[in-house]
Length: 375
Image (cartoon, rainbow, N blue to C red; front, side):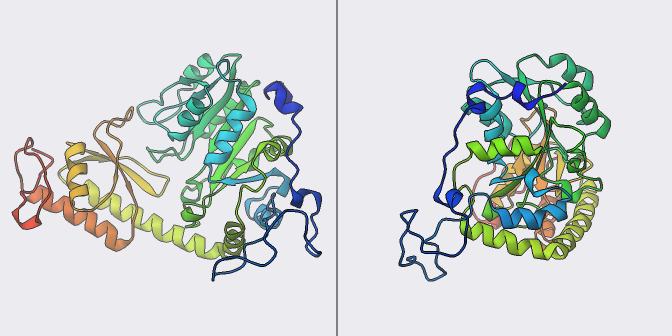
């Protein structure tokens, strides 16, 4: 049976957290002489930011909880999803001894966080159709495996991982946390795994305000887990990890869920249209099915296509060196005008063939030969 105490680093259990001024007095009214703040104001014309923010973002959690159908005590808010990713590693993995399991191709920050914290990585690749190789995962788990990372919808492939595979791993991982990263869940037609938090004490779900909510600049991530684990994350996080401006803007955004849903609907329609247009191009070998706000597209010669797009100031991600993504570019769904600009450049490439080994350089478009990717 899973118990959180069995996987936490021993010193975390006995750690005394930093007690901030706003932890010791949570009232909103008074003469505040406890935090060494500037009492006069701020050197900005946009507002006063001289007081420290709520270290636990309570009003946001109370507003977010009914939207996500969880309890406020099951929510941790971080500086992007990267903060809870790092905190989960630091809370559970003894450097140089413990390990965590990832399933490439997947989001790169899991491995970066492991490297920063001197934690070994076990890699079990997804199957060629970007699904979990369940038996291989179960065989790879050791007694030192503290974290198992599942990205669904997956980045960079865009597809949802099969529910049954995730459930099987949750059932089997009695000594590991199983983290389901749902950064792109708003674009998928499926319930969130947050609905299973009370069923699986070893389940952690990550989401973000960066994608569907359109708040990438705020750097605000959501982590949902048992109250016991949320208490641990609150104990080890920096005291004031979410700034006051971010908290105010996020609180306001939660009043506009309908606007978020409307944007999602438009992005999904644009995704379908973009995928259909890309499939019609001779340079495109295939467009992978997507449950996210991007497409993984396989080209005849992805690197040359990528370089030419960059030359035309159309910026996509080259994933061609990532496992299972040979000759693939990851393309975010843009506005109608942005998508049409991408397609226009790709169409002109196909209509103006040049030798495949001709280097692409800078210069005026009128004097630069175009590249066709299906030579």
